[in-house]
Length: 122
Image 1 (cartoon, helix red, strand yellow):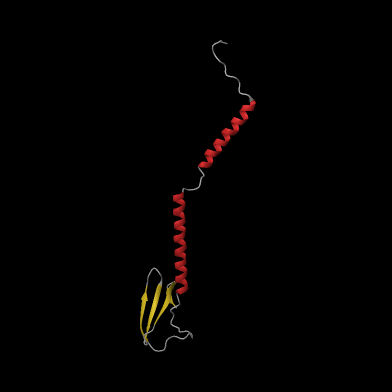
Image 2: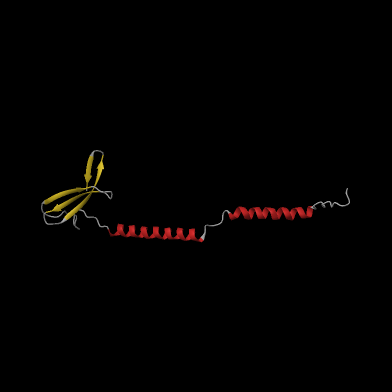
């Protein structure tokens, strides 16, 4: 051994364990930081989108509750008296409808579907 060189002292077992624990803790903290919740801005955007969806659901529910069937029958279940003045068939993304214009000025809307090769309304 040279007298001018210092030889590092061996690391004792009592120091290895705390260093290992600190290293593992720092590694775990680094790994967990990747799993942190979204930023405040992202959370606010998600909250706003959720609120918009809630409003849209409420609007759709109101529409569904407000829709009363526009069938040819009155409250007693009978169609309007008198002759049919004209018929109109309409197609749209919302659905296909047959509209009946009655002689007394009333109208009736019947939903239509295609079953095999036959158009069915009513």
